[in-house]
Length: 427
Image (cartoon, rainbow, N blue to C red; front, side):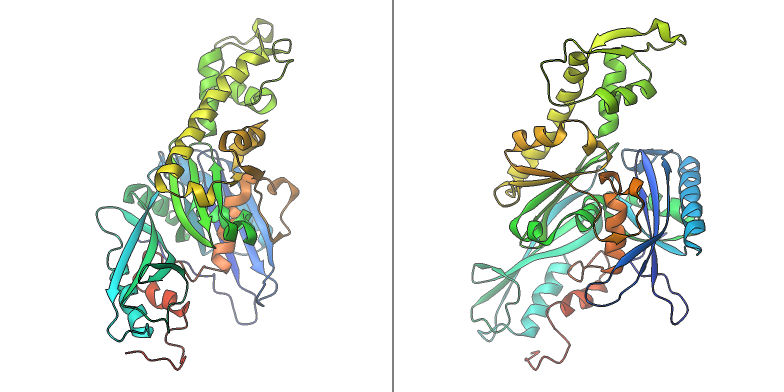
């Protein structure tokens, strides 16, 4: 089984292109079907159909029960198809496995003529791309960070510059192959060709971030049910990515264990009363806690809200500590750590935005899907940022992303005008 590199659903001539996106998460599966209404430089995307329901058979972003996961994906797609009045043939698919991480690839070539020309750019790109997919991991994205000439960094197009050495830095996002294969098999069993796949935080970034954030530097933190994914951007490029095997479900489990209550009640308490920020009234506000195995509501225990806050806060603090350490160790904290965008279903926890602002000493906002017309009000929250971003990727697949396929190198080289009759030497 091979997952494709992304393409639109083909329709008869005269029909606007339609694409589908399937967000397979630990707590929720979503399918969106959309159409481009205006194929100009700034196309408008209208959602035609949506299907979403509680996830089954998915744990920490990976398939744990193939049959259960297939049933949920199939049901979501069928509901979206019915609303859209079309059949989904292929769909953009995300991957949120905790094994996802990025590494920087650096490559340098000597300049034979003293001036950078098209041939030099081709050489350094080919040499850098030959180092992609080393080892036993699968590459999701290969994104250029920038060129440098004799150590001068931050160059987007080096052609015509004088020097002795040309260098390039690429950000390769890779993942363990097993979760990737299983996601692909699950979608294929629903008779849909999986396209992509797209790293979840990258998709959420495309769906929730604005241009100024991407240029000035920002870190998006996607808090899902079973994983937390991070993507950092600077000067319009993704410079860091990482996933962690912790999410909103772990907070729920902490509550269930700490208060000896069923998971369903623990989730309800987290949503209604959970918070990362203590208040003076927490000790006086009492919460009903139905114990495990007791069917009578009158048998519920009563605990102050302060105990619940004391359970929730340490898990969030631990998660943020993981992120802060990785940002610091990778060196991106200085350029992308002063603006934080929280998204994903678990980002809706009470007080989380304020707590994140204090913890990271950064400006923090909640990210929601942007630029989608016709999206139902119930699907405009941060839990749907990934699905919206998958549509954005499908319609406007970033040219700078070479993906995992060597054939994408030609597309990437087009970003610099190579092979388009620019009149420059191709020696």
